[in-house]
Image (cartoon, rainbow, N blue to C red; front, top):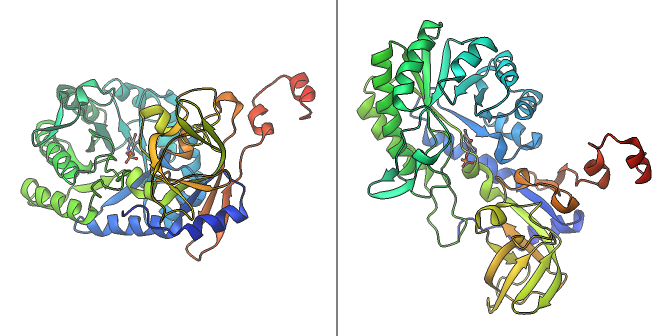
Length: 419
Ligand SMILES: *Cc1c(COP(=O)(O)O)cnc(C)c1O
């Protein structure tokens, strides 16, 4: 059970120091992943990981990424502000466009970031807002189904992202006329893939397309951006992607398509980097028996939306009860007035008592950051287990004052006793 290896004492100690619920992150684990990724691609000169900020947008985490030599993948003004505040600039920022306000192109160009265009119409927007850089990246959508062997891993034809191939041919030619000299090619064709063949299969598609487009358009192919999508085993029995073999398999394809080298590789992993290094630490607060057996937690979907949004599985353990048989079947719920607010449905667990410390695993990516304020529920704190074994509060929990901060009606604030 590779993801579930921290002893209960880690969570118990954290819960002694901070009120639940909170997300706990493990600095050592995050650094280890950053290093393993770098090692896996060390054969490629100029390899760079651009950590996907949306997975875990906390400055304490982003600074760790910086220390590990990573850049950042940003997709909004606030993510760019975060990157800037954490000392990232220039080629250490990838700005992935996607139907965003034009002004964000200007900001990205001001920071010297790489711009990854999502559509042929973005070329003109970039020309007018920030200008066409010498090196520009384009996002490719090959359409149809994305298969590894005969297995359908995703269907890009239904995805809103990227240029079609003919649009890349046309778009790159106009980028050249507008002064671009080099290009990068990016694609994200399948999310959370635990199959080691994802990156190598994607790499072949991108390498071949990039090579052909360079020949056709006269632009130099500067880099291939394999983007995110390497997954983690949310279920204990699932395959754990092996980043070293993934790197080696991409290397083999690279040598085949680019015998002379020179093309750089970029990645934008989010989930793989931090997902397994985060936990939502909660207490069981309610127990209810009706047509089913329910355990209510002090956390809800506002703290972790993936189960409600995608029916996603998150492993759950109960501190101090790891050795007990999983002979009770529960729905594990939050407090929202929304029946989707369930962290688990029909989950076999040891008997849970009110007051038990319940840990929801693999919340280190797309966990806190996907949170929201439905029902007036407030987002939790974030705590970092540092490399030296300290527990550091890296984001306080929201208070009602935060929730009301965007109201512009003075009387409302006064009436609520907030002024
Ligand atoms: C979300 C996203 C990522 C990260 O995806 P993971 O599944 O977390 O690896 C990378 N690049 C872009 C453009 C994204 O939108």
